[in-house]
Structure formats: structure tokens, C-alpha cells
Image (cartoon, rainbow, N blue to C red; front, side, top):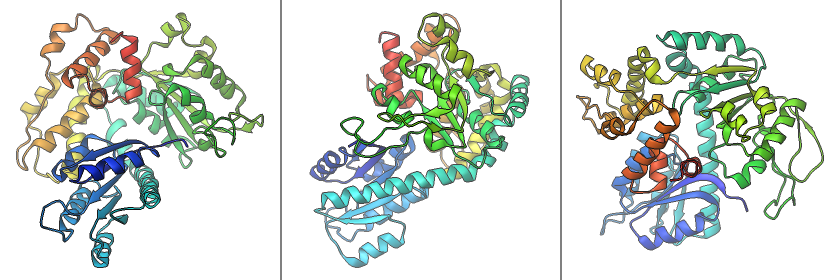
Length: 447
């Protein structure tokens, strides 16, 4: 059985409960995390993309009325209103279960639980979480476009936005080039929203986060019985985007054998699942993105030249944030407004002194690093005064000998690994990468 890509958080003060639940759920979901102290929940949710929380209702010894669980569920819902919470308790009063459900719990489980019931409850909660996230994205996309990526004081970015307005209504393949964190996803989403396909699916496929042995199955789907775990027919991510827009991020990571299949798909607009000969007519628009030098990859025979020419009908180079300093204040204020609302701190403001500090930093992680900096600052500030927590530059200034992108990338990876003492998950999170993408970069640089 193929695991569902989801991150489950289990919170319980009993280590045996945590171990048992994690071992069981790990069979079905890609990531299962555990916390024994509820006070760590909010920070963990801020730092990770959680799909479902399984929460115990009793943490204080001598108190078995379930109020702890209800309190922390309320805190979670205040932070992430759409995040499903499943309550767990060994004290199965019906009234308590009803109270928890009325206050927003997605389900209620009694300990000791039935394994099948636990799986079914969590699986349903994950599906609900995904639907909520998708609905939220659709509801907020116009607001995001107007306030963020479509507003710029930079001449370079204004020229790019004008170019996007011209190409969006077409079905031309678009290749977005730029460093990590420059906003390639946001621009791809904007292109979709300005196209005739805006009411159809927009599917983001991060090729850096899919393990190589699952590439073909995830992208193209498979027929029942095509391989050992293929227990049913599965439509791949590309097929599920019919009539919409496929955004293939980190296209430079696509293995050569799949580059051939993708080239055929783009040329013929026909798709075959693994294990079947039937061809399915495909009507999608493709947008591609990478931070790699594809011309160099072509020269080194790591990327097909014919595919490169196919995907860059229109090629757009997105400037790094240090090359559009006029936008730093604009973006910082946008992020501040977002996180003031999210964390209920309406009185925080960016003074001229703080804005000057932001403009004097080179932002090697670009917009993503600025976003994280503002969010971290809001979280750790009191309600009245914004404490700007700027990244540290000492090590970077002593190690960067030029502005070569690969050298900077290698330096940042080393810095993140050192900071987190070799913990791959934490380093990847800090860098804004998936574990798989970080492993590939470590291998590339021989780390």
C-alpha cells in the first residue's frame, strides 16, 4: 500500500501511547511526529506543515475532565482554524465527546483504540484538511495576487509583470528561472489566474520533493497490477489537471528517462499510465521553473536539449530580491500585515529604522527568507513593540568570495547543517526545501 503524503502530529503525555500510535499510523502516512508536552504544539504547527492533530484530552495528573484537551484544541483552532483535530481520551463520557465535537473536533477516539478506527479517523481528517487548504487557496488567490506579486516598485519586476500579462492568455509553455525563494510559484499561480483556464485546476508538482523511484507513478499514474503495490488504478498528478495548468517546479531534477516521456507528452498531448497501452488525450497548460542553469545541464548531458527548447517558448528570468531593493519595504509590510492578523498582534509596526535594517541586508534566501524573518519576528515580539530578528551575516561575509549562485547555495546548506547539528529535517525546513531536495544538493556538493 502506497503511503499517503501527509504529516500527522500526535500529542500525548504517555510515551507508550505515542509510540504505539506512531508505529501504526506510520504504515499509512509519510510523516508522523509526536509531542509529549502540549505547550510545544503551537510552535510546532508554525514551523511545520501539519495535516491533522491527534490530541489527548488529559495532561495534568489528577484532572480527568478533558478540559486540557478542549483548551489546547481551542488554541490550535485560533492559530489554524481549518486544521482538523481528533480528540483522544481514556474517559469516554458521552457529554465530553459531544462538547468536543461542538467546539470543532473532527472526531473523538476512546483509548485503548481500535487500530482500524484510528486509521479511518485520521485518513478522513487528512482528506478534510486537504480540501480545506485547496478551498482556502482558491478563496485567497485574487487577494494574494493584488497585494503581493502584482505590486512592485522595481523596474525589472514591472517589465516581467507586463510580459506575464501578454503571455498568460495564451497556452505557450513558460519557463521561470530564478534563485530559490524569488517567487516562482507565486508568478506561476498568477499566470494561471490571468488565463482562460483560471476556473480549472492549478496543480503544483515539486519534482524536488518526489523520490526518484516514484516519479513516473506520481506524474503519469498507473494501471492496477502494474507493479507490486498497484492495488487499484491511479490517475497521476498531470492527468488530474485536465483542462487546467500544471506547474512543474524544479524541472532540472527530472531524471533523463522521464525527460523523454515528458517531451513526448508535451509534443503529442497524449498520456499513458504505467502498465497500460491506452493513450489519453490531455489538455493542459505547462509552466516550468528551476533555479538551475539548464544550458549548462544541456552541455553536461544532464538535460535533453530538445526538451529545453520545448519548455522555454517564453523564458522569464526573475531577479533576486537584492536586485529589486525597491520592493523590500513593500514586501515586508505585506508580510507584517499578514502575520499581525494571523497571530492577533494588530499593534506591531515597522519603523523607518527597522525598514532601513531590512534594506541593508542582502537576503540570500530572497523573498522566502524575508517572509520567514517577519513571521519569526511577529511570533516572538510582544503585542506592542516589533522586535526585528534579522538573520546573522558574520559567517556568510567571511565565506562568500563572489556572487556565484552555486557557491552561495553550497554555503547556505553548510550553514543550515551546522546550525541544526546535522539534522536533515530541520536544515531542510530552515532552507525552505524538502528532505529529498536537500539530499540531492548535498550529494551534488559532496557534503
